[in-house]
Amino acid sequence: MRFALEAPATKKDVKVVFKAKELKVTVAGVELLNAKLFGPTYPDDSTWCLVEKGAELQVLLALSEDTKWHALLAN
Figure 1 (cartoon, rainbow, N blue to C red):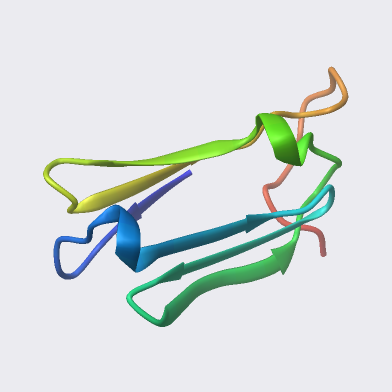
Figure 2 (cartoon, helix red, strand yellow; figure 1 turned 90 degrees about the horizontal axis):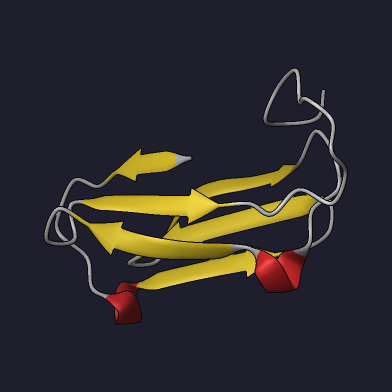
């Protein structure tokens, strides 16, 4: 998933908490996402990166099941 950031960020500004069925994303103290995921993931294999000189945050989730998700977030 991708987050377009209002102001360029550095890795010190970003806090991403991966849990098996939850994800929390905070940038510069602003919570962008705090939700339950549609399916289970491998938190240790999930990662994030900043691109476009810090203007975009990309989060990559490692799915623990080989199934198609119908949504990103649980209902």
